[in-house]
Length: 407
Image (cartoon, one colour):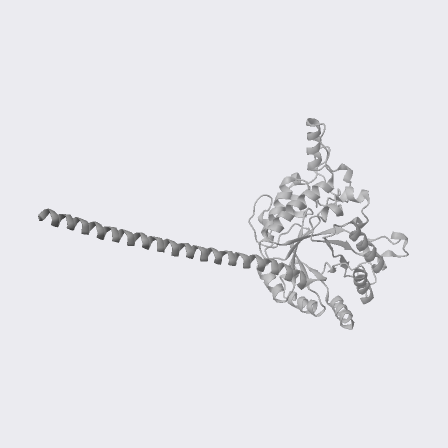
């Protein structure tokens, strides 16, 4: 009797345990199924969000292109941007249809106008931190103006005077400069330290919200006894040819192209457009000018989103192009140079010339400035930028306002 009771008791315990185990397994399966469903939902949300972000970025790019269209720009120094007159200029500029503001963040004196880490040859004396980039960008964007940071490259009087090792050298081992009576102004564009510091400056600017970085003086020096100047890359090439008889020597345009390739990589990372200024005379692409400056338009415009030939009739000789008086023939000079740049440029690169907006050596009237604009328009170029080193634009902007109001 006792044995029978014990048997049924054990059987009862086993059945209860089995049921409990089965319920536990079922519960785990349900939890796993529920978790799997949640994971799928979460992944779906993540994918949707990611897709929306990508679509939003693509849409913003499209909007940016549509928003600005034909460029109507003016150049401002950092000192103007940091002064109260900045806002008066913006008011007049907008009334005249201007949609792009180019402002200095590093000028040809070598001064840097914003705060960034100081290393290498970027000593604290170079810095005049009067520009807060995000603040300026915000001000311009509120007015629907494109924010373009102008950065001078290899012309740097401050550094050239203080560090002769970063300048071109001479055969006798001394440092080269443009003239005996002039202060040194140029750094060696092929020197690795020079290039790396400039690329760091571009990187620091690119991540602070500007729409575009515009490089100026992206060339080799052209004045003085150039035949006496030996550049870093030439010394390197001479060494390499002694080691490898098949080594192909580089020219100045190769150095500029490689530098732009590196700069473009930085700007692409931050979705900032890269543009650059070129000599007006380079538009003719004569072999002598390319060899001297290193500005090969076809090579450069592979990396530029737009190129800015600096076309000022005052800089041409009286009889240039068999004209009677070229300095006061702004339509001819702008039309001819712009058309040539269009011919030599990469098809995806926009052509936006700088045009003269000052009275230096010319009869500066409303007809003078409007004739330059008409030359740009008649060629279906992509815009223009007004250049006045003193930033005296009010008269010019009033002429533009009158011109566009009549259209």
